[in-house]
Image (cartoon, rainbow, N blue to C red):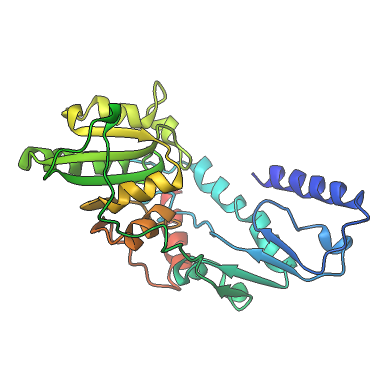
Length: 286
């Protein structure tokens, strides 16, 4: 990842070096990809970086769940994932981060550079609308009195708790017969190493194959346009979001703005303790 980011940095630099008409007053870039690393050599302009996440060896996206054993390779590679982020922290004039939790993950010596600025949400779109009529697959209208449970994730993966959601859904199915589940997303892994756990197929399909679900009560929509997703969340009676400690999903904020009841994993992590704890956990693994 670090080598890719250095190549990206050089590519941006070379492309802009040939554009003498581009004379910015301010450079804004997403940290970690090298986009702004070499631009101080081209422009006398302040650089502001968006800092999304700082990786720790164990206890967040890596090694939080017992189903994901941490190998020595995973552990050593995790340290290098922060290489370009650290260069950006040193290189930029200012940075911003969406929330206090994500900011707390960054090294203390750089935190004064980072301002917390929530990304905001379009409450005109993401809101409860009683006039919405949800249709199931094939265009059939939702039967009157049916309750809706929603799960939304870009990918059906372990990091976003797809397997835990399926277990919860099965328990709900066994107790209540007036509930359907609307599952939004795609069957692929965007984060983590799911392919190492089930190399013969996708993680999502593996979970479903072994779940013993009544699939007639599930509607898998694939990816949806924003407006359609807003309609789905507008009729949701319960939204399930069971994630490891990581960047909060936009879908969680969308569901909250849509007045959904949210069943979420308890990820209350105290700022300032991540570094020492993760280092001790990593040392035990080695």
